[in-house]
Length: 335
Image 1 (cartoon, rainbow, N blue to C red):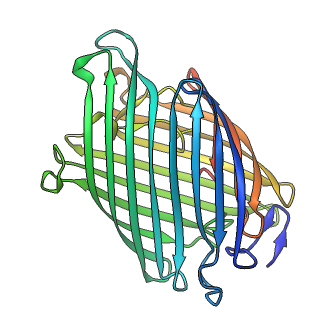
Image 2: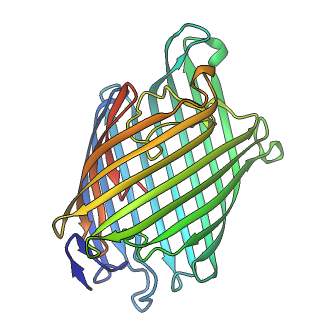
Image 3: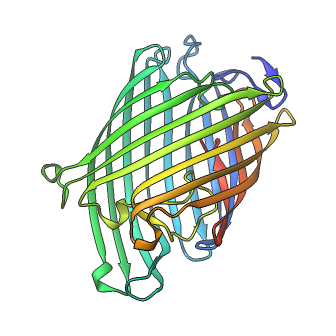
């Protein structure tokens, strides 16, 4: 397989399978210090199928100093010359978090969520680069606070449809192309839900090679829309992928818009660095004053090529937002 500065140019590993155990270390203002492990196996299910990207399975186990913990497994499978794509994940955990509520106390409200979830998604190639998908999602979330009116116990059964245009040259580390997706998830009463709700998401990730195709400029736009009787745990939160720099859960609502850009600098075959900045805003926020407020985020990070043939990376980012900041452990790129 071809090699270049910053890692491989292929979407497939050499050989049948490669295993990589990765330590997990993280810190943010909500969870404190977190530590754990991320074992991953990248493999080629059918060696004669040289068109499909390599598949990936793995697990994540984490415990933090504020007694948050979770354990999960995940898998991404590319099959039959990339005609079929299957994504699955499942896990359990307890999260100690908080949100800001100005209309009751004007202070932070701590809460605890005990959760389990399962996701299964199948996509089929319709024509070159165009995929249609169906999915099922299960989640059980019990949220407790010191305010009885804010208690929330929710079991969700969701059905999803998706349509995506994927022209990336490598799904594990794209240097060029785009992936643009429209997703619709419904949680109807007739499917075992307590109330009917819907979530519509649109995302577009663009990738541009620079510096003689050694580095990458990436851009992402995301819009999330909630419709119907959304539960507390279904709300959109400014955090993580959209956008780094916010870790305290202060900004949450029924609608989320984000725009961000990232420069991916590959200075070594197995090492790289990133710099990124973006803006986010929520509408129908839990606090009226936060609706439409522009929330900037900026940061940088380091990358290590766990699987250098495909350039699949893990890394750590540090980012600052508006009166907030955080450190993030990344499995793959942020987007």
